[in-house]
Image (tube, rainbow, N blue to C red; front, side, top):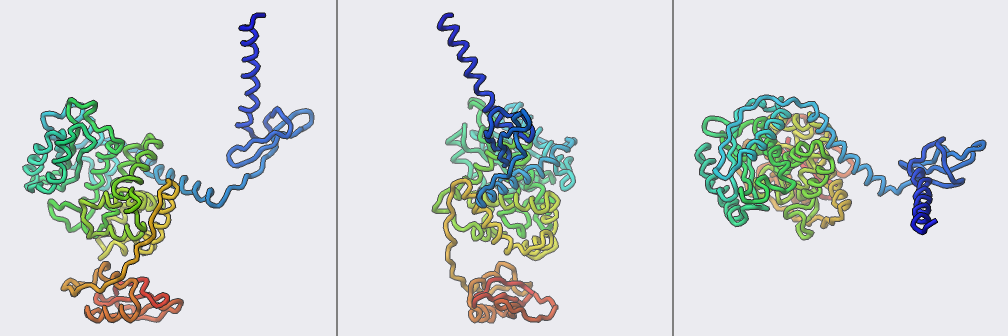
Amino acid sequence: MTKRTLATILSVFLIAGIVPQASAATAKAGATCSKLKATSVVKGKKFTCIKSGKKLVWDKGVAVGVSADAAAKNVRSADIRKAFDAIGKIASSVKVKPTDVKSYSSPGVTAASQSAIEKRYSFVASFFDSELPASSPVSLVISTNAEIKWAGAKLAELSGNPFTEWLEMFTKNSLAEPCGPYYSAGSNGYTKDRRILNNYSLFGKDCKSQLPVDENFTTTVEHEWVHNVQRALSANVNDNSDAVNRKMPCWFTEGQAVFYGSALGYRNDYSGYLKVRDWNLRSGKYRNAKDRTDITQTLQKLDQNFDGFKCGNEGGYSIGSIAVEKMVLLKGHAGIIAFIKELNNQVDWQEAFEVIYGIDGDVWLTKVGKEIALEYADAGLSILAAVVVTPTCPAPSNSDQNGISRNRANSLVGMTEGRAEQCASSLNWTFRVGQRDQESYPMTMDYRLDRVTVVIMSGLVTRVDVG
């Protein structure tokens, strides 16, 4: 027997010797095993090889304990999948409907790129057909980065707006990097003849790929259609308003667009969804440790009055999308749509949130901020402690005559009871205490828009309600 033949035979035996170990990985009760007292852990159960009559078989197994932290992390991971599946289940049943899309493409845009974008529009428009008919007329302005000024001029022509600020924001980077990584996209209200107006900038023909290779571009068409839906469901918006009804906090405006854009763009690819989700978790200004302050405070900052142009990079994309993901876990897609519609019936978004989800919006932000902080810990990212803010009494405003806004009322939070009452008096607000520590007080049920009702805990105002 040659050494070569002997080596071949030995290799066969060595490979065969691996088989019992492989079977251990698939152990199940009653199945045959090869080595007495051998153990294998499968799906949280530890199986032991025992003798049953003349055979060796795996026993029934016992649950293997995991630490509380590990168990909680597993729950968070499972919840991510649940939220993704909640949207994916609806997406899987979508039948693509005819759409009315009119595209305006710059000379550098290829027919294939235009077709790819229009195809994605057809799907996402069909997904939201119940909220915004898929047949709604849409005008798309598509250009290359090198032709960004052409895009600005076309948008201005179609809408009747100058688009000066838009050009100031995108022109420099687009012209400097025609092959990326920069590109722009937007939902821009309506054209002069009442067509929905959206825009996209792509890379040039001489680039490796005209459609941006950034994983986020796989979500961009879907992202912008969400903004179209938000605008369609919101009342009291101007014909070409740059933002939806300002009752909607910007963390939700951008967060919903990112979450749905990602879940629909990667609807058949969960690993791709996780990749873009992680990118958003770390993205923008919020990825820097020096900027990652307490998440609840950041969400509260990203309210309906925050600059829409800055909202995304200040946390709207990252923590806003996770907040919306958690809203989906509560009441699914139907809850999200019901919340947007309820905004039309309430003075502030917090009240609309309570109608749909059964918990005051500000109270929920405190809860969800802590949950999102754990998501950052799971990703190995730290969150800074809450910034200590000294509350200040707002300046008098004529707007109070029409009702004290939730944001102005919340300026009392953190004040001592005496200081809060003094501030309210200076603003001509009626002031009353509804609860002091564990003692609640009887109150009249009349609703007054010039009155604030506060909760006092340990001498400080912790909650304010108008009425």
